[in-house]
Image (cartoon, rainbow, N blue to C red; front, side, top):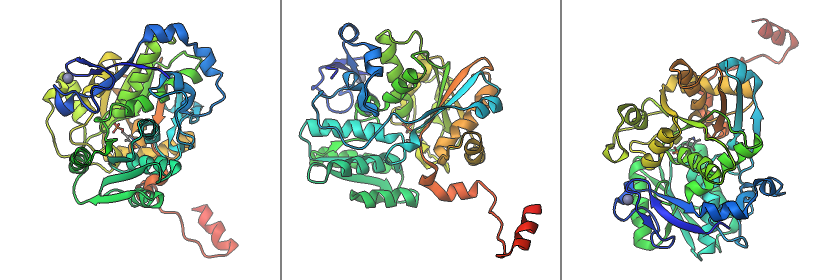
Length: 416
Ligand SMILES: *Cc1c(COP(=O)(O)O)cnc(C)c1O
Ligand SMILES: [Zn+2]
């Protein structure tokens, strides 16, 4: 394990001892999300990237020496991480870039990138002897916590989920199937989030909420490690990812930051975050040069439910990720997101939910705006499986032709 050196606030940069704080910076409040930092000099002397790359473990736990968990910890048994990373020649040609790859995180056990964070939080909860973990979520983080929780068993860990009652059916079904305690809150994600956190404080449940729990990014950073390792530690110029609360982009930034501190990569990729137009506070804050602390809550409306966030909870780290890597934030319309679902599926064979497909529309916008150049190599983080939201997928394509059961009728239908 990597022993944590300190927790550091992303806003005021105050430092805390590893066990001094559980959630956010006491001085800054909820905006003060914490970085989990290590003694990189000591790690550098002790670790070898080739040894890690030689690990037989085909999951995120191959990076255990860089994760905040004991080496003999009880790990959730589901295989999280080490998702496929495909070179995508037709996507490369379609975009007109030097190279494009897709990382299919929809193949995680519960179908989204969120499994990385939930596996990390559950492993830590078990290590600390915690019996109840709760989260608020637009759906995928909840499914991830419920699924990883089920994999260790209800006797070990109980999971309590706060989701907006409007979450897609498949996502709610998944929670119930896994046996989580599910509260369908008849309001927005933002409201569910605050209620969950208050209940956690009141009941002493461990809170997995995005942007509150500093360990979610420590799980999510493993995707950056995997991209770097897959490319022989020669990182792409650009990494594209869709952004709601900003925790995934923060995690990917943290992963490349760690590797750079260790001297295992020579530079870090530019991170480009994609938001839906109807939920794009980070795009505007970035364009205006605004600080995270000055951002105000607003209404969010988009079909891409997983990136609908009126006040992104991890806004401090998300803005920092884009600023310190010289990346960008772009916004795309719901129509562009819908059209991106079949476009990306036909170019790569990967079926994405709306929030995930948004990265393809975002890359087109980033090319128009000059944030991606034709000479760039680009890795796409595909965050969620298309089966998560079949209704939107159906809206994105023409209906299919009804045919009478005869060869004649089939031939006529095919001629059209
Ligand atoms: C959660 C999620 C995102 C966005 O992640 P944030 O940390 O909220 O920015 C993107 N795509 C999918 C499929 C997600 O579930
Ligand atoms: Zn602070």
